[in-house]
Amino acid sequence: MVSIVIPIYNSEKYLARCIQSLVAQTEPEIEIILVNDGSSDSSGYISDEWAKKDSRIKVIHRENDGVTNARKAGVEHSTGDWICFVDSDDILPEQSIYTLSKHIRDDVDMIIGTLEYNGYFKVSRRYNYEEQNALQYLKYILKNKVHNGPVARLIRKSLFDNRIFDIPPKITRGEDVIMNIRLAQKIRLVILLPDTVYNYLWNSESVSSKSRSFKEFINYEIFWHRMVMQSINPDFKKKLKWAILYFYCRQLYWLLLKKNFMLLKNRYV
Image (cartoon, rainbow, N blue to C red; front, side, top):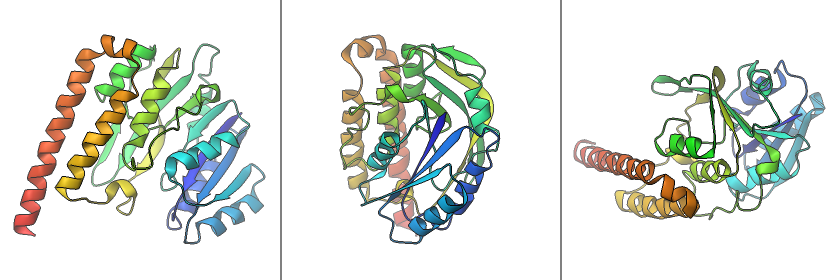
């Protein structure tokens, strides 16, 4: 069985749409775990009402402790052999779980489908069918050839341990990358699929969309990069030196773009 874990925080505008896409899955063997992470709006009530209508839905109410710990709570309460994370403002096409689960094999630990991004622009990162080992997959993450978050995929539950979720509370953006890098080093095989299994809907009110001053942005990036590098085992680092160099160059490029954007914004707005 697949356990779908949804961390929820003040998502009343989008939550019903998200849950509707989950209960409409053509694969019936699922459980849906809604983790209400201390929402101050009606998200908790919406979750409870949906649980009354569908026995596959389980609701966890907890004090606000961040998205990483909300995901951890969901995994701990799950009963499935596979975990699928979904953000509460996104939706799954109705065939998503079926499409992913039909590729489950004994030697596979992660199955990733195509994600469509619907924001200012509609973008789809479509893969060719491919099977990768841990090293190949880590290279893909560092070279930004695969979406770095934990969504749009099935993850074998046995991969999760305390270290996967041991991310400092200070990390409020990019925690997905750290989690995925740690998971990647435990896998045997990853399967990439061309099928669209996730619709990411951009939300201007999300944590990752909130702006910081450039100084705050730089300080955060330095700390985040340190956490990323500490998450890669030394044996892997030796084999990933060129991918790591590419990762740093790419991040520097985006930092320069961010600085120029903020200078223009301060000048003309």
